[in-house]
Length: 117
Image 1 (cartoon, rainbow, N blue to C red):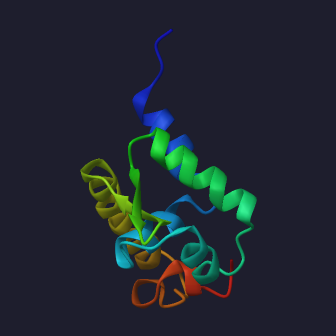
Image 2: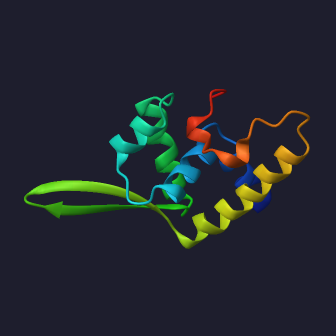
C-alpha cells in the first residue's frame, strides 16, 4: 500500500512533544533518558519513551549504549535525517513567530523551557 511521505512526516512531527524532543537532543547532544526526562519537565516517562521510540523507528534519532565500569549508559543523538528535519522545524518555528501577533520569544528559548507546555 502506498502512502504519502509528506503526510507521514507531518504525522510524526505533528505529535505533541516530538519537536521539543528533537530540539532538546539537538541542543544537548549525548544525554540519556533520565536527563531528557528531567529537562523536559512536563513530559511523562511513558510519553518520552514513546516519542523516542517513534523517532528511532523513523530514523531521526539513534540510541547509543556504552559500557563503563560494568554500567550501561544510554545517550540519544540526531541522525543526519533528524538534523535535516530539525533545521526545517527551526524554519517553521521562525515562520510561526513571524506571523503570531504577540510572539512569546520562542526563537530565544528552547521549547522545553516554555511555560505554555
